[in-house]
Length: 281
Image 1 (cartoon, rainbow, N blue to C red):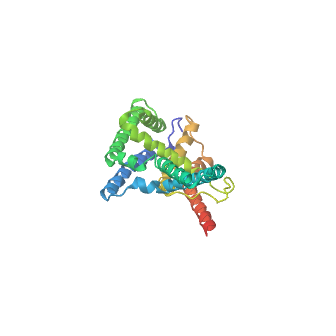
Image 2: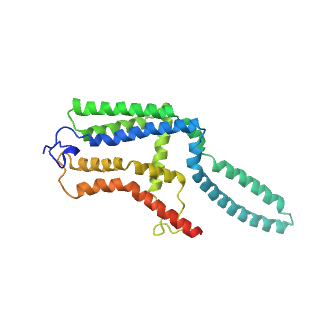
Image 3: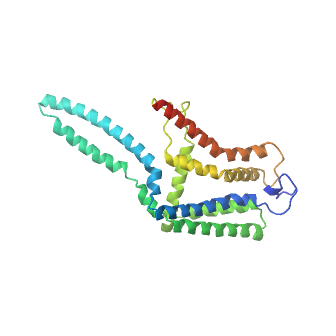
């Protein structure tokens, strides 16, 4: 086995560069284009997908602000009653003014980040165009790294991801929507890893219900489990580079565990919602 052995040759002699490492970026690029098709049909049937996906989060934020406003209003009314009783002044007008001011402040903060505005900024033309650009960039990365520089597919994939990262972080006005999209994806991914079980988060009311956008996100991750497998294999190969990966149990377990991550997250979501439903009933 040569020192530049690729993934396809791990458990057999084989020949030629392995294409498995190129499968994960290709699937991700196709997913971007398919989401553009979804956006096209959403607009065609006048479905505000951004509003639907964010509805649970908006309602959750409204409830928190309403509870905070109610607590502050109660404390302020008690203080106002004490002062007004001492001065012999009716407290009704002051409490009404306080409630109106709090309601205005609540409305201002509850909808300061309008998801509908961002939803209008992302169009199917941008998503399909982005998928085409990414596909071209992937092929250019393969050609430059493998054919011109004589490297392997592992380096080609890493060079593609690095080029995409640089293209996203460049502060260009035309890619502002793309940076916003990446931030949202990272936020939802971090939220999926946020533990809500009793052993970690012991709130009196029980675990926080799973918002619909996180269920949608986890379902999408389950559809991309093969991508997680390829990522696990990619980093496992990179950790042994330039030596070949030895035929051992961890060479199978690490990629398999990565592939199981979306299903573990989705199963945990189901258990959390079962607990939430049990507490409510």
